[in-house]
Length: 137
Image (cartoon, rainbow, N blue to C red; front, side, top):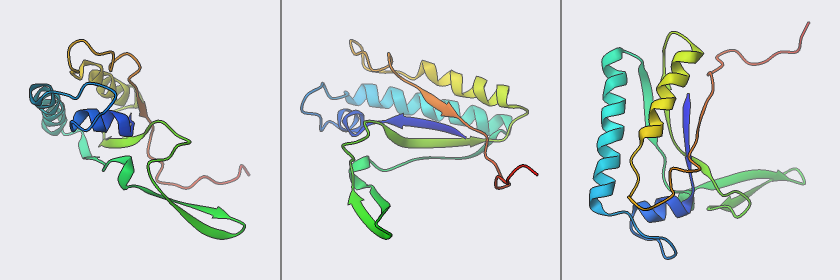
């Protein structure tokens, strides 16, 4: 699974709702969508794409935690974390190294000119474990 991260601030910039950083232009957003569409289509054509989705903004999230044995719900975004999962892509490929190569292609994701958005960019690649962990025998 290739997990993409961002913050509410990033999504606000993308949707033109940012108050402290420049909003993305319609042209910049179109370039981003074109890049992601091309990247996804290449995975479809290679037969490696299993699933992929973007997630709603953190402001629409809800966290459920246990406190004193009871569930406690908190609406997002969460002050204690800056970045959250904003999308994922599941690939079925020959190896973990191949999944890493696929994820590394995302370093070419376009950003608006004159910004440092790509400087601290990252994705995580993690195998999906279909068997729950068990204690060593």
